[in-house]
Image 1 (cartoon, helix red, strand yellow):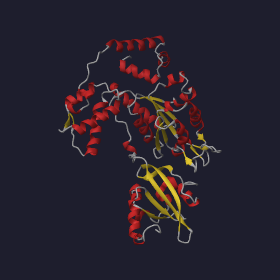
Image 2 (tube, one colour):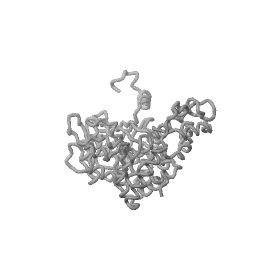
Image 3 (spheres, helix red, strand yellow):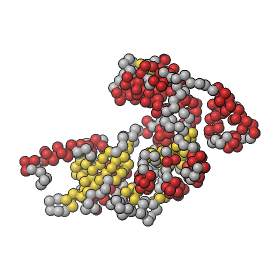
Image 4 (cartoon, one colour):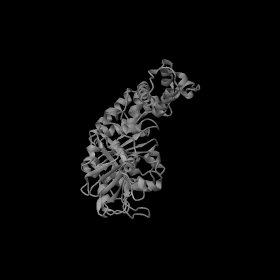
Amino acid sequence: MSKLAPNWQKTSVFEAVFDQLGDALVLYDPEFRITGVNRPAERLFGKTAEEMVGSHCQEIFRSVVSRPGCEALLGLEKACPTAPQTLCLDIGNGLERLVAMRTSQVFDEGGRLAGGAAAIRDITERTSPPHRHTVIAESPVMLEILKLIRRIGASEAGTVLLDGESGTGKDLVAKTLHYQSLRQAGPFIAVNCAAIPATLLESELFGYEKGAFTDARAQKRGIFELADRGTLFLDEIGEIPLSLQAKLLRVLEEQTFRRLGGLADIQLDLRVVAATNKNLREAVKQKVFRQDLYFRLNVIQITIPPLRDRPEDIPTLAKLFIEHYNRKFKSNIQGLSSFATQLLLSYDWPGNVRELRNAIERGMILEESTLITSSSLPNAISRPVEQVRFPALHESERILVGRALEQTSGNQTQAARLLRLTRDQLRYKKRKLSIL
């Protein structure tokens, strides 16, 4: 207040500034009783100031302030403000937030410690309640995958590998697996391994101790630690540098890790779901992916078929996306015209579910009637280029699969090995090609 002009040193000014801050601000005393919050904090936690003031930090922060060395405690112990810590914040009602929290000491006029202040910035979108995380499926192959997901969720399987083309919905399958498992009350954290520079990936995954390197001015918890007792989704697993794969293997094998610069092992209890659109077997042959890590990840493999191989799902997914964008755009689109539906069913969908979603979004924006018509769809769908078809290719595939099964006397495991496929991929091809 001393830095303000005298006529601005008023409680009303302080309150106005306090509420206009972009970050949530929580003040607490040395006994961790909350003494003040601003309006962004009310929105973040979904509680009024009257409900929070006087409560213990643990009642509001839940899982964050429930362990030794928590961020609020560090705010009372350290004279300098702590570096922002990334936390998975449970805000009740089945909702979680990923936030960056920074704490500092607060002193009274006599220079005595009066408590602490926590500035909290929301860095992720609100996750939906558990029942919203589910794969929408009508096709037989996807219904089988949903059955498999339920069986895996009820088990203690530690690692699952999701395989499929880009845009098939591997992230949604991972969320469905988490929220249909015994770990649904724990955090679900997704990491795109290709989006984080290789030089930063190790410190992001494992965290670091103060002084571990030049810029490590405070301890940082890594993503593995944040995902403890929950599910960690490692998307684009094939992009992890070879030098880091050995450390990842140790985490999967022993469920322990060390922060960078740390001396003590930290015990974990988490499920790792990895996803890739690459052929990891080929990556192993090319010596760019460790064979032992591949086999450890591949305990249970789920191959998600491309959208062109499950056309039964297209109308259902399109309806779901129309409902979503009706809410988002405040529109009133009733559905698709019959010709637009035929175009969607006949299109090859190289971009899979992601491309379908984008096509529906475009149609919702451009359409002026109550139905999405062909003129509102992307040109690639509404004006398809005539393609040369090779019906013999389908027949050749049938012959190869039939010969492999005949040569192995119907043993699917051995036949899959001859064809360089997984057993699940062979079973899928048998259904697709109507091979008994």
